[in-house]
Image 1 (cartoon, rainbow, N blue to C red):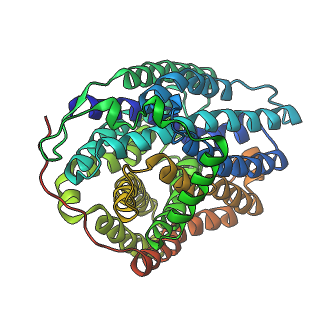
Image 2: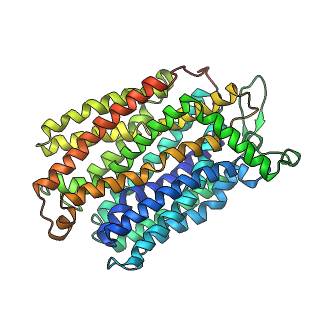
Image 3: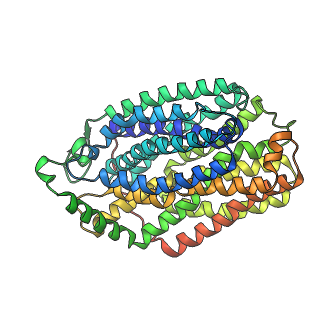
Length: 465
């Protein structure tokens, strides 16, 4: 079982390294460095939201078409990895830093290209995760641990980038770091896609070959016509969307993604405005260590609590985090103290980024449950993960647009020019910071409690070689 888990870990590292830098910096780079104007930023985010809505289901359904090379999860990861890293590098090379229309078009093209290849590989990775741990809850938690170790290593990139680039003041250094990260990501994705071999899987006394396990079809099984494939996809979609369990997952995941994106995109901006420079000076070791704590803390917490997640169940841990999120927002009453704001940001980071990976487990559990409920010969993880993305990905565009709007209404553009913090801007940021987990955490708790079936999957011990 070690090779498939290693493939999951390497592929996760390659994806996470790029995504961490992308999510943490792209808003700040395009607004502060490339000076894209608000009109083009909003246009880009709106178009990006529609593209997100289309591309994940598209790749998900293509990866379930019988006889297609896209059925092979590992081959998808290996083949598309050069295109993903190329689009990532393209993103950080400005066309015009004077705020012209060219830079607005650069932002649109960058978002479209990067997200297309990231989505295709991400859907394959999600299906790989579900396939290699099918009906094996303990192995599923072990696979999650591998992926979190990969994320833990990848998030060091934020602390390194902040320190070496002096919080983007030395933009050439930032570009060099992004290029180096792209090369490292390409190597990891390529080798992750190369790994294969046998999967030892207790199913009576059976052993299945990994490639067979990853749903590679025989030629004679790939005889469906295009129209038959379309009808089959529509029927599968109706079956999935009719299940209240799936709707509970995607609705809560949408709000969780909005929180996560807001946290990652605006942590740097929030810290700069509400934490005095004498506590966390820009480009200092202290600031790098603070961001390191925010990014590494969640992964460390999750890795150290692998057995707790296996024993209690991922969904119960998720619901408990919503309760903590709701009550953590009450810390706004002590927001006059910058050290307590920093403590809140750490707590909020734990409840957001520790929980986000657990959605891979409950979605994979749903894949297994859906296969049993509908008597499918095999699960349809690509379609289910892509439908999840269909609902969830728009949050990546909605959150930045909404927060940028609120910041601009409170004088953020003036702050960028004169670096003078007004009480109006500081108050707006504090309200966003503290009320987001309170409101969203409460909504998520209600959704899960009213719509989700808390039946635990079979947790029989499974030997891992």
